[in-house]
Length: 219
Image 1 (tube, rainbow, N blue to C red):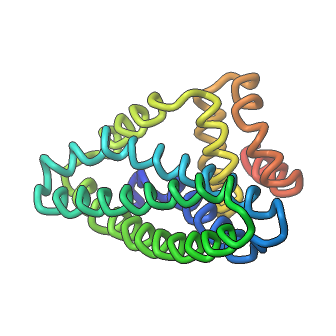
Image 2 (image 1 turned 180 degrees about the horizontal axis):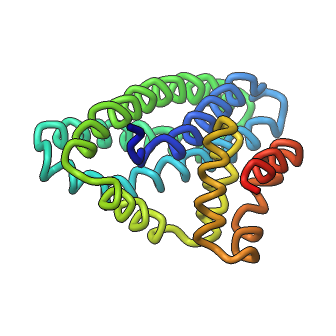
C-alpha cells in the first residue's frame, strides 16, 4: 500500500537546485568579471529554498518526531544545526564574492565550490534519513488523513507566490506519474484561475510538451 509521503515532491526539487547550483559554481570563471556575481545570485536563491524547507520542518514535522521517536529527533536537530552552520558560512562567502577583486574572487570561488560540495553531501544524507527513518516513524503512528493535515499546515505557512516558486522548482524534477498526482491534487483544491496562476511558472519551467502531457493524462 502506498502511503502519503511528505518529502518526496519537495526533496526532488531540493536535489535539483543543489545539483544545478553546485555545477554552476564549479563551472564559473571567477576571473572573468561578472560570472561570479551570477553564481553568487544562484547560490543565494538555493539557500533561500533550503532555509524555507528547514523552517517548515522545524515547525511542523520535527515536533511530531520529538513525541514519537525522541532519539531520532535529537539526531535530526543536530543535522539541522550542522546544515545551518554550513549554510551560514556559504552566505558569508557569497557576500564577500559580490565585492571581491579578481584575486580574491578566484580564491573565494574555489572555496565556495568546495563548501557547496560539502553541503550537497550533507543535505543528501539528511534527506535520505527523512525519506526512510522519519517516514517509517510517521507511517507507523500517523494515518494518511493525519499526515495530510501536516502537509496542509506546511502549505499554509507559504504564500501563494512562495508555493508557485516551489512548484516551478519541483515539477521538472518529478517523473510523469508524480506530476499527474501533484497537478491533480492542485486542480481539485483550486479554482481554475487559482490553478493557472499558481502553476504558471511551473508550466514555463517544465515546457509545454511535458505540461500538456501531464494535463492530458488528467482529463
